Amino acid sequence: MLESMVITAQTNQVRTLTLNRPLALNSFNAAMHEQLMAALEAAAADDSVRCLILTGAGRAFCAGQDLSDPEVAPEVAPGAPPKDLGTVLERRYVPLLLRLRSMPVPVIAAVNGVAAGAGANLALACDLVFAARSANFIQAFVKIGLIPDTGGSWLLPHLVGRAQAMGLALLGDKLPAAEAQQRGLIWLCVDDDALADEVQATAHRLASMPVKAIVAAREALDGALQLDLAGALAEEARHQRKLGFAHDYQEGVSAFLAKRMPAFTDR
Ligand code: T3D
Image 1 (tube, rainbow, N blue to C red):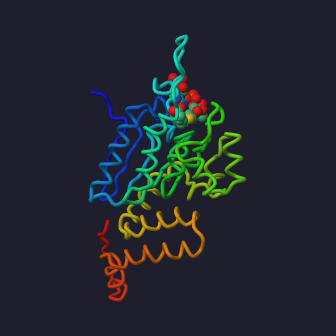
Image 2: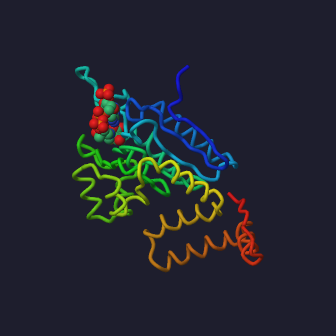
Image 3: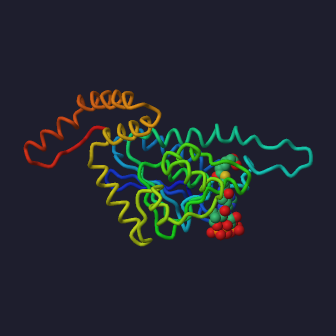
C-alpha cells in the first residue's frame, strides 16, 4: 500500500500534519497538495481539534514546488507550449494559503529542516513558527526566475519590513533559523532535539486557551495593516462585541472571579 504523503496524528486536542515525501524534501506534487488540503479541511471540520501543527518528515520541512512534477516542469518536447504557472498557483497554492490562514484553530509550523520556496512561505503563513536551529529559510524563487509566491510577497514585508523582505526575495540566500528569529521572521529558534517537545507544549497550551479569540486576533492583526487607526479601533470593537457574547468570555471572567482554572470550549 502507498504511504500517505500527509500523515495525520492527534494527541488530545492537538492534531499534527506531517508532510511526507522525505526523499524529495517534502516538495509539493499534485497528490501531496490534494492530501494536505483534505487534511486541513478535515481538521477544520473536527471539533476535537483545538490546535494544529504542520511539520515535515525526514531532514526537511518542505522544499516548495516539486520542480520535476509534470504540472510545472518545462516541456522538453519540441513545439510543446510552456506550462501556465499562474494556473498552478490559482489551483493549488492560493486555496492552500487561504485555507491555512482561515483555520478555526491556531496553527503552528514546526520547521524541522530546510524550508524553501513555497515551503518557506507555507511555514511563515502559520500563526506561530518554531524552527530547529539547523533549519534554514530560503526564498528560492529568484534562482529559477520567479517571485516569492504562496503568500511570500505579502507575508515577507508584513513580517520583517520592506528592506529585509527585498534582501530575502532578491538574493534568495539561506537564512539560518537563529537569524530568522533575530530578524523577526519567526517566533522561536530552538535546539533540534528540543523542537518536538517545545512545539507540543505550546500547542497543548494554545488548545486549552480561548481559540475563538486567538483566531479573531489573527484576523484583526492581518487586517489592521490595511486600516488607519480609526478603522482598526472599529474592527477591535466588532471583534470584542462578538467575543463578549461568546461562552469563553463568560467562562474566563467567572473563572477569574472564582479563582479557578477556566475551561474554554468555544471554537
Ligand atoms: O512552479 C510553480 O508551479 C510555481 C510555484 C512555485 C513554488 C515554489 O516553491 S518555486 C521554488 C521551488 N523550490 C526550489 O527551488 C528549491 C529547490 N531545492 C533546493 O534548492 C535544495 O534542494 C535545498 C536548498 C532545498 C536543499 O538542498 P540540499 O543540498 O540539502 O538537498 P538536495 O541534494 O538539493 O536535495 C535532496 C533531494 O531532494 C534531491 O533529489 P536526489 O538527487 O536525492 O534524487 C533533490 O533533487 C530533491 N529536491 C529538493 N528540492 C526539490 C527536489 N526535487 C524536486 N523539487 C524540489 N523543489
